[in-house]
Structures are given as structure tokens and as C-alpha cells.
Image 1 (cartoon, rainbow, N blue to C red):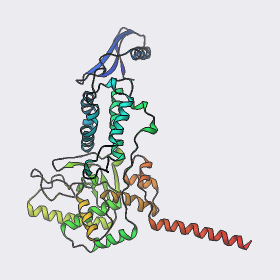
Image 2 (image 1 turned 90 degrees about the horizontal axis):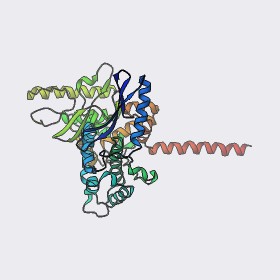
Image 3 (image 1 turned 30 degrees about the horizontal axis):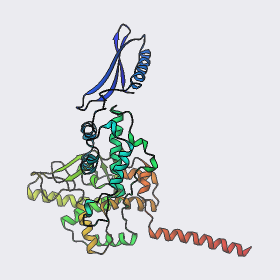
Length: 406
């Protein structure tokens, strides 16, 4: 409960209840003076005061506030504290879809019917990525994200006492838009083997060594692209063959990026690499040192993977998409199925589990808070499905033979 008690002496206590914020962000507070012989008695009086307030309609706590005014407070109090990429994604959804529907509506007038109509309209919006093809509508996942954002903002309005109830709660959960998440492609063993052999035959240029190092680092550790692109040399423990993941690059474009804490607390972790990846790192460091010396540059922050071009006369890390462009080029040149950098994270989990690693160990390696998330990263490989079918076939054959013997 949002409330405090303050001892004013002589068994006098001041009760304070937070009623949220005004449209300009100022806190609304209800106060009352009571007599009480102990802190426990004062807290009981606070509970009674809270029930008394909430049983009456509250004026000036959001009755006249519009959704657009709420969003300004939400951006200041909540969204501004999120990672750069999260802020950017939320702002795009608001500007492209949400505010067009709700901006001028008063919070007290928004109903579940408004939400339903909004969702239905979103399902019929043409995706901007496919303007030439009228059949391409906004994806189920995009509609889900729009609804989720509206629901979240209105839930905050309830928490801040602007409204008594979130209208989204009047819609049964089974009617809420559901995402249809894209399944990242992974390579079968023969494709992976072919690609690894291609890497072994590449000329040892500085660029190839750098990209090859990033590729193997992502594949053996499952590190996110924002994590390995933010690595610094002091993160490497050469003796123990490990790397500390303690930061990530949040990237929107060349002029708009930041290095900050990883996605979650569990994302701060230690990953282990083998001697082969260590040797690639050493070769890459040697190349980088020679490059810095020849240019007279200082790698002030000690980034492991540097961008080719300076930004504002400063060395910066590669963009998280850098490896993807190199990877796609090699796939096209060698007639291999296209995969993404994030596919390497899925492959790290899939291959580790298929070759005996424990699920909890893979969860820790990937930095997942919930083991259910880890299970999403598991992909059945064709050769294993064949092996499973063969195991069942052998068992059925044994059963048939034993029946004949009887």
C-alpha cells in the first residue's frame, strides 16, 4: 500500500497516502493527523484511512487526464529508465499506432470496446515493410506488442491512482492478441560442417580473423550480439579460458547507441571458450595492436571488436549487425541456408543439449532468468529425429521377435 506514518511526538501521528500524480507530474497526497499510542496502532489507522479514501470517488487524480498526457508521465517516470533500444521500440509503437487511436481520449472514458476496436484495426493495418503487397498485414506479433504496450501503460495508470481499473482487464485473457514469434533457422550438422570448412580456407585477412572470432565466440558461448560487440579486453581471462559478460551494446543507429548493463541480472555471467577460440582472440589482438600502432589510435575503452570507421573522431565497437552482414555474404556465395547472428545463439543451445549438456547449464550459459525461455531455443535436428525413429524401430523389432519366440 502507498502510505507512510510519521511520528509527530506526544502520541500524535501524521498519516500520508500517495494518490498518484497530476498531469504535470506532481505527486498527489492525502494526509491526516491521528492519536495513537504505538507505531502499530498508527499503521492500523493508516489502513483504515486508506480504505476510507478508496471507498470514495477521487477528484483530480486522472478523471480529466487524456491518454496522451498519461504517456508523457509514463515516459518520464518509467520509459526513460529503460535501455535505449527498449525506449526506441516503445516510442515507435506509440507514434505509429497507439497515440493515433488513444491520444485525445480521457482515461476515464477508455473502455474495453475501445481496446477491442484498436486491436481489430491493427490486424488490418498494412505493414510498412511490404507496402507494395496489400496481402501483407501487420504481424500477429506486432499486434500483440501494440496491445501489450497499451495494457502496460493503463496498468501504470492504475498503479499511479489515475484510474481505478484497467479496461484491458474486462477482456477475457483468451481474447488477448497472441504473438507468433519468428523461429530462428538453425543449420543441420552437414551445413555447419560445410561452413566451418569454408572458414578454415578463408584468407587470414584482419577482417576475416575478426569476423571468424566473433562467429566462433557466439557459437560456442551463445552470447547475444549486443553482448559480444561490447566486450573489452579486460573481460578476457586468458589463464582460465573464460570471458566475463557484464555489459551490452544497445544500438539504434551509428549516432544513437549506448553501452550499459545486459538484458537481465542473470545475463551477467561468465562464459567459457576453448583453446581454438582463445587462439583466434590472440591472433585478432595482434592484428588490432598493429593496426592501432600504424594509425596512432588509442583504444581508450579497450573494445575487442572495433568498428572500421571512427565516430566523432573516436574508436567505437562494431555494430551488433556487423557479423550478420559478413555471415549472409558467405552463405550466399556458398549456397548455404541463410541464418542470422541470433541463430548462432539458438544453435549453441541446441547442439550443447543434443550432445549431453544439462538444461540448467545451458540456461546459465545463455543468461536466461527462466528455464522455460531456454526451452524455446531448442530445435530438433534431422539426424536426431532419424536416430529417434531408429531407436523406436529397433525396440519394435525386438518386441516382434520376442512374440515369435513365445
